[in-house]
Image (cartoon, rainbow, N blue to C red; front, side, top):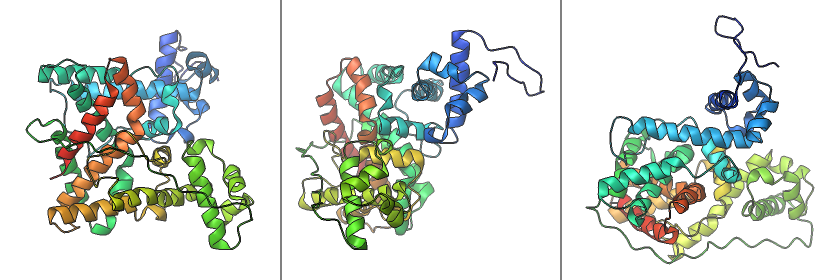
Amino acid sequence: MNSNTIDHMGNAESPIRGREAVRAKLMSAAAALLADAPPTEVTAKQIADLAGVNHGQIHHYFGSKDDLVAATIQDGDSHYHQSRLSDGERFPLPIETEVRSPAWRTLAYLAATGNWRQPPFDPSPIVSALAERRAADTGASATDTNVMADVAATMAMQRGWWILRDIIETALGEFDPDIPAIRKEVAARSQRLVDSELPVGKPVEETNIAPIDMLSNDDTPRGRQAVQQSLVLAAYELLAERPPAQVTAKEIAALAGVNHGQVHHYFESKEHLIAQTIRFGAAPMLEAMEDGSAPVPVPIRTTTRHPMWRTLAHIASTEAWVHEAYGRAPVVLKMVEVTAERTGKPTTNTSVHSQVAAVHALELGWAIYRDIIEYSLETLGGDIPAVRDRLAAISCRLVD
């Protein structure tokens, strides 16, 4: 394909020339395609075709499709925040819960794959811009721990809501939730994170959530349940260390000691096996909630994170959450029960649901997006351990 493009009247336009012009066209095309589909379903050729350039230009100007995706999301993220703050309002604003950035799948994809670490994904300029705005409001420096924790909390909660919104709302389904009311209250609750009139909590000492021990693979598993269990355990072990895109069905089957055709036979696909593994992986978190080593629902865990966080991000980015395994998310159900008991309200109460949704969005948003936020805060000179402690403390403001 040549570098001529066709305008809306069918006339040939002038060829795209110049480094910045080509880069801008490619990022604009990528943004348009990624608004409707996850990065895994968007090809380099599709982007180049829409941009009107040869697809070799992607490699020439960006290195790879993933590098282009990283550049596109960074550019789009900055424009999103700039547009929201362009009317002179101060940061932070309530998080956006009614609509979400078209780039939400891509945010999840970058977190799941770790591709944000690649050039040209530099420290996010929006982090420093938001820190400066918050510092101006509070009279503190942009590197003040409280300022940085406010920025980190707001960004984590916003991205957590965008990325996991469908999963959270699906999990609340059995409690007959009023979704529009929950969304409005979650947005309002997000302002509590920076409300100096509200008390903060005390961070608790965090312990790693112990992975589930593998069953012995000395013998080939027999029987439907034994094979299914072995496959889930094997998937859990591999997904605790690597994102799903880097784990194959063949690897899972080999570790489970079965033929890889069993994955399709018992789970239909690797994605369905992953869905069951996420559900199974909630067991150690639930156990930690039961024995008190994991608080319910606050303060959130900010130092350690569940080993399946990459998988949650992957499921969100591919929208593979649309599966019966997510009909009952046990962690969300447990949080609803505990919050209802603590507040003396029924499990069908909207306030209970919004508290759980807000806390879950913040904690999962931090778990998934933590590296990207900290990467940017660190370059500003932030004290990351102190920011984590402060974030855990202010998370307590989200609940009544």
